[in-house]
Image (cartoon, rainbow, N blue to C red):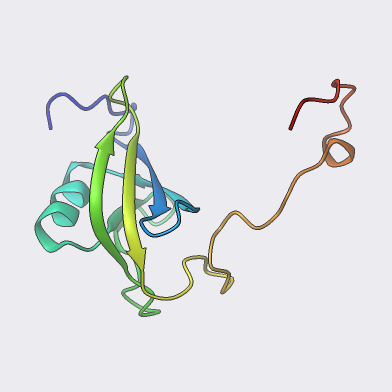
Length: 116
């Protein structure tokens, strides 16, 4: 735990990815306590920046995240959680929080076309 690079609020971003298909499900923030709870319980916990409290993902909706694997990035400032979702992850009812595609016209940029 002492090797983690936490931000000024003692938080670290945590990307959640579906263990079965690799889809990115959400981004949350963890503090040391939520990380310890995740490791000890096997279910994903976060720290809510807006409510300033621990948040057990799915505690009210039942759409929990079962932690399968945890990874730390090379800079030790981001966590990757590979999890099994038990229901939709997003509060909107979507499977993932990343369902709104941005295009060049949305961003109003003059960037060149890329290979992808």
